Each structure stands twice: as structure tokens, then as C-alpha cells.
Amino acid sequence: MGKKNLIQVFEYQKLKFDSKENDFTESHFNAMVKFNEKNDNKYYTIIHKGIKFNSYVGVIQINGLTIEILPKADKDTSNSETQKKTWQNVLLNMLKVCKHINVDNISETALKKRYNSILEVYFEMYLNEIEELIQKGLIKKYRRVQENQLALKGKLVFTKNIQKNIIHKERFYCEHQVYDKDHLLHQILFKGLQILDSFITGILKDKLNRILFHFSDFKEVNINSIHFSKIIPNRKTQPYNKAIDIAKMIILNYSPNLNSGNDNMLTLLFDMNKLWEEYVYRILQKHKPKNYYVSPQNSTQFWETKRIKPDIVIKHNEETYIIDTKWKIVSSYKPSDDDLKQMFAYNLYWKAEKSMLLYPKIDQKDSEFGNYHHTPNENKTNQCKLGFINIINDNGLRESNNIANEIFSKFKEKVI
Image 1 (cartoon, rainbow, N blue to C red):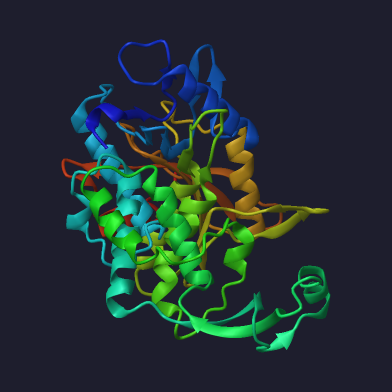
Image 2: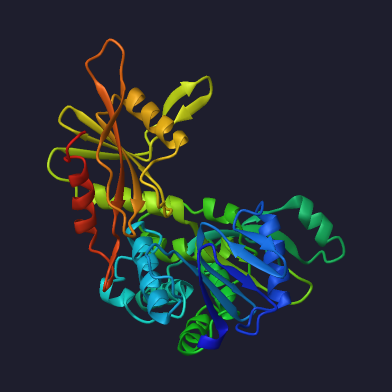
């Protein structure tokens, strides 16, 4: 994929097809409108002659054009190549920490490689995983087949035998077992490779063609989510787990022929609010101090069928702390009334000493913990603050242990 076939935008930016500055056409626009309508219009907003992106980041590849939507939380208002590279690395690293790039051998060094888009990371991982499986030897499995034969082999299927062989009495329609490589695992991998064949160009294309040669004799199957539920994990299939996970992402996010033409579409989109929440939880869990316990989205009944669940609950000795993550830029140091009520409910129901609304940092400073309610008949105070954490430095995403340690330290600060 050449640079001219890549458009990089930041979340909440607009993209119009009447602009001479990019290769986004009305055909791309129409396909994206149809895709968004099929998904309850959640991924972006349709505007006059264009798209306005929202909290979903990731990548859309359609008919030779790749649109990469990047997160952004800093005070630099430019759209420079340096900015795009920085936030692409941030997104890649966050996806790795959150196991959305679920391959152990993708190192920090490898993630600094210049990828045109994050889809190329997944494409390369997929090909590497399958290439490794081929080198080890693709496994054989037993499977049951039904077919017409000239000799009786296995079990005769009476109904179909009558239907198909009423004239050809010399044939038998039988069901029997075969032991070969043409089974569900390889059919899924083959389908993923076929999809990649319409999106990959350049060096990866040669690698894809070499791998496809090994799958030339496998049956083509229209794979859907049901097929993945049929996989029974065992010792023999364990080496396939990573490749199957990536294949599932590719196949289930593939939308063929959204228009009457050939505008096939592959999407990989993440809600940045949820990604930020998961990222904060995972780094806190990984780097927690001794005697700290971190758990995500604890849920409790609030009223009738309604439940409340804070993003992250931290327990230390007899104390409980609550974190509610917010991926948005705020200029005011005063939380909204709704956020305050929400944090009060969290403190009350979890008997928490302190709660914090955690935002990415631009140039804000933390508020101090404030006492905003005294629980009746108890010598206890609810305490809440706004916390801001800087997630980038000159090299991209900060080291996760430094971010985690800074977040933990925020609960040790004084109360006003």
C-alpha cells in the first residue's frame, strides 16, 4: 500500500469527498454510509459530502484506500507527520497491552517499525503465524464426508442415495471418515488469506502468494461466526490459537460488496473510551504495589434491574479506591454534576474512601481531593478528585510502569 492510498485523521475530525487534498471519493463515501447504517450509525456521523469521526479509532480499508483514525490527547493542534506517527505508536502499544494485538513476539522495537496503517501489523502477524504453522507441518484431522462412490464404503445414506442414484444403480451415496488437512481450522485460515488477497500489496503480497500455494487444495467455505464456535480446543489445535484469533478479526470485520461495484471493506475499529479504560486497568494490574488488589468493572444492583459498575476498583488493606476513566479533553477543573453524582454513588455502594475521574493530560493539574458529602450517622467522608495523566513523551507512549505508579500515587495525596 503506497502512501498516496493512505489517509490519516484524528478522532472527531471530518473527511469530505469533494476535497482535492485526498483520494477519498464519493464511492468510498457511499460504501461507508451503508456500512455505518448496518451498524446502527455508531462508528461515525454522516455530514454533507463527508464523514465526521467520533470516539472510534482504528482503520477502514476500502477499494484500495486506507483510512486510519488515530486517538489524540495533547496540546499540539497540528496534523504533522510527526504527530500522526506518535499517535499511531500510542494506539499500537495500547492495543498490544490490551491484547488486541495478541501476539507475544511483537516487541516494542517491532512496533516502532514504520507501518502505513495498523492493519498492516495484523496482516503481517497473520502471515507470520501461518508461515510458522506450515513450517511445523499443517495438522491432519478426522472429518466426516458424504459423497457418491462406486463402492460401498462407510455408512449408506438411504434417503440421499435414493434421491441421487435412482438412475445410477452402480453408485452408493455414503458417509465415511477421512483423515486429511482439509478441515475447519485450515478452511478458516484459507478464508482469511483470500480476504487479504484483495487488500495486500507490495512485499507482503509475495509472502501471501507463497502461503496460498499451500492452501490451494482446500475447500472454499463461506465462514461466519458460527464456524468459530465449532472449534474444539485441544493439544493439537493449541498452536493455531493466535492465527485463528487474527483470522476471526479479519473475517468478521470484512464487508464484501457494499455497493453494486467491488467496494469490499475491511474495518478494525475500537471505542477509545473502552480502550482507555482497559489500558488503565491492565497497567495497574501489572504494576500494582504489594498488598494492592485491582479489579475491573465490579457490578452491583442499584435499583430494580439497574446496576452500577465503576471502571476500576482498587483495594489496599482496609481502604477502597474507585477510578472512572474518561477519554476526553476537559479544560475545567470542575466535574459535571452527573459525574459527581456518579462518583458519590460509587463511594457509597463500595464504601470507598476516595474516587477519581481520570483523564488524559494536556496541561491540566490534578484537583485536590475534596470532601463533598458526610454520610449520616457515620464518621466518614466521601472524597473525589479530578486526575490527569500524561501518556506520551518524546518517544511516544510513556512506559506503562511509570504511568501506573503515577496513578497509584494520586490516591496518597492530601484531602482538603
